[in-house]
Length: 369
Image (spheres, rainbow, N blue to C red):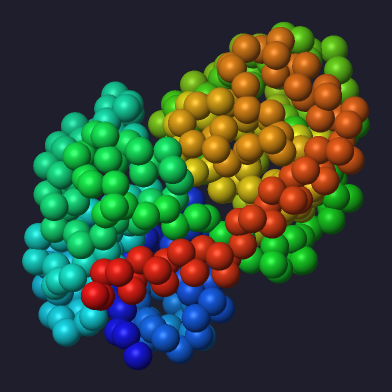
């Protein structure tokens, strides 16, 4: 078997968003797609196995003694602990966007996005300086690069000067069991105080580029007199205080609920009951909630920026950030729910975990040649 050493020391479970889900799902899909062709060894922070028992059943997981919340400590462990144990692997896969200076070769690098080049103002000076220095060096050291979308593929080629043949799209994949154990609508409505006929859902951390404020303008404007509530389901980001102040200032306290980050059962149940997933983000390397919502039966209204039109396709709305246009799209999603559900489920079926695993297998084979 081809030995693959996967570096996920950057992945603090539950705190790094879609990049964690993306990588775990493709590794699970890899096992489903090719069985025993690859021997997976995953090098992870303390507690990773407990957070992902399904991955622990198919791969050897080596946990460091640290939870790796400290970036300097994590970088040191990548250069020492991980580098020594990954030596001799046929392929070394770095899933967090950069290749450590002392990484064994050959290496595969997953780049989730290049947001730091588009919105540098949303990054701390230290992180921006780190990415500006490490990203170009990382792509030079990687034998092959994996990205989640054609949009990110184009930006890596154009902005970092990487040959197109060295960058492969490894599509996001969702497991067939998604939604099989979700919280009931009745329970969610009672617990989250949702009494409106129609519930809109936005599962995203409150960072500025996620544009939560735009949805507040929609709710305070053309949707003010409708029986509609909006749920923000995501962790507290850099715009959290601003979002909360805006909810109060616009007198939307009863109609907009900030419920924090939800567990999988609650998140899936909320999407399944949603009148629509509303996703006005201005930057996404992929946008996994879009596909998850489609699989769970929620119509989608999203922005037409970065990777989102590619992901939405003709199975939902990908439109300009105009409040009236969004109100009209939401109304149509409610009125023609069954039609949008059918389109969405067909679209979601093209993003299976086993397909993601097949894409990753092709990258590993190429890197090990």
